[in-house]
Image (cartoon, rainbow, N blue to C red):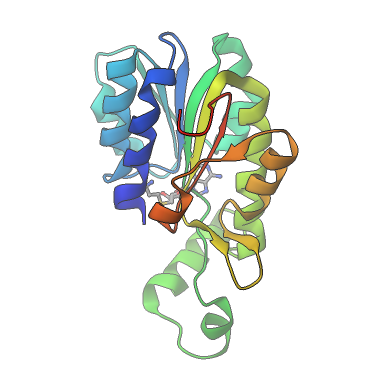
Length: 207
Ligand SMILES: C[S@@+](CC[C@H](N)C(=O)[O-])C[C@H]1O[C@@H](n2cnc3c(N)ncnc32)[C@H](O)[C@@H]1O
């Protein structure tokens, strides 16, 4: 869904206090330029975390409000973020890939792009599977929660409420539950945006 989902964060810009941080984990030409624009307009420092997309650093050439992070988002948040002294106004989490139709992938048709992606994750010592995608987003969310400003908004791409079983599925499936247990809430626009889920704290319904 990436192409449209990240834009939803812009609707929360009035809650972003200047001097705070907007963190993107999982970068690309769709989301990173648009999110940096939102960060710039609202006076946030933008942290773009993705070891595989060094080219996004060009967006912030000569500017000190753009920081390219050449490591996994959870490692950056665990080891480096505290030293910034900042709080996080917003995060866009769209990283460790979610595998659609994994059973089919494993048993029959193996699309070439997926075979390559599995090999790429394997080279980095990781197994591409949905539990690992969910764990990565959970680990990141625990740390975003630790450094969150109040208010704060986190948008998870490829994350949806599965009505048939009344559970969350996708990249943020474990993270959304964790954040709900910590007093965050799923924002109203969930239904309108289907495959992306916005979780907020300190923002009233309709706020
Ligand atoms: C779906 S793509 C991101 C697309 C991007 N948000 C866009 O809309 O243009 C997923 C990206 O997550 C990155 N990634 C995977 N695991 C990561 C992690 N733990 N931390 C940071 N990036 C990660 C991959 O390198 C890949 O570039």
